[in-house]
Length: 477
Image (tube, rainbow, N blue to C red):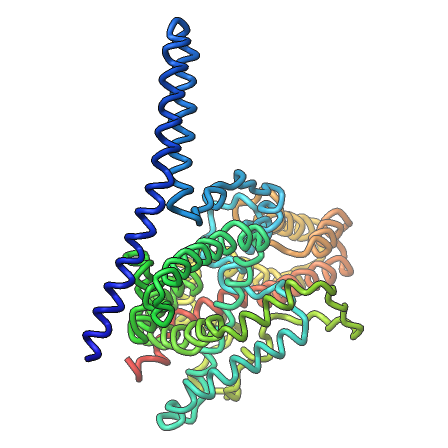
């Protein structure tokens, strides 16, 4: 009985659609006939002027096609959606954004070809010089803390009580957030919303309205969602087929994004990549897609944007700027002095440890830093041991000038990027007569340089840590 009823309804819908088509065709026929008659008359009247005849036929053809299209289709695709002004890129903005990242952190030269670009501070510490409001930073910390609490600590506490592994995850998340924020700064958000998001939204709305009109005319309003999905056909996104397909697509999307956001050394640890992929796909992307597909959420956003009354500016004072996720990435592991750990001073005074450390610095393209530390330490030992003779004064001055020309001069091959005030102070000591006070000043300046250089060498120690980062994840590999 139900099948018979459905067949009767379908037959009625088909008959009604055929009747409407016949009515439209009967209405069009006399108009087309009269138009063709007038075109033939004008052709015989002005056959001696071929350009005019061709123009009349082109005009008649355009009118006929337009009349036919508008008679059968009341909603047409907007061709303006496929047209847009040429994109303009701001070269000055690009230069300002990349000027700091192109400068070598070892020698300070923007065109450095001696040192490896992978060890630059922008590559190893992208969060430096990134300041965000404190309220935004607190919200990010709360969100990421809940993320780790629900998806990491829930199983990690059963394996170990050490925070070393989680600290590495925190550092990786901070690295990804910093790289992502820098990339967002390079994007013109209004242009992206207008040219990309707006066009795709209007195309989607146009297809929805066209399908809804056809379904309403046929009388089957109950199956409007299925009709819209059928209307998309091969254009339907693969993530809309099922929940599993959506999650699989988000995992593939995360796999393509992670290599862009993580440093090269972290990409060698597949356990870390798998963990970050699941965090991004299941906890971040899937939650965001569910929220954006909520009709109530979308309607509230549209109401806020399209409201006639402008938004009232907040009267609360602006939050102070803080470094990006500095508290979140702070190590939770207590510092323990181990007998197996060697400090920089121990390495410099141990021949067995100095050689492998020298090979490591050479592989990182920063051997000049280690050479300067050894040269400065040796110079400080001999500067007070020598007697105050003219020959010794000339020898000290010559050696200081050699150190300056090797590590401080702008055109030096092994130049180190020191503070300009410190370089100027050493230059003044070289120009002054060499006496006991000047010896003290030179020794003091070189000691400051060594201390400054050791503090500035934290990015190399970070590289050393990253080369051994995978050992924390071998337990879960």
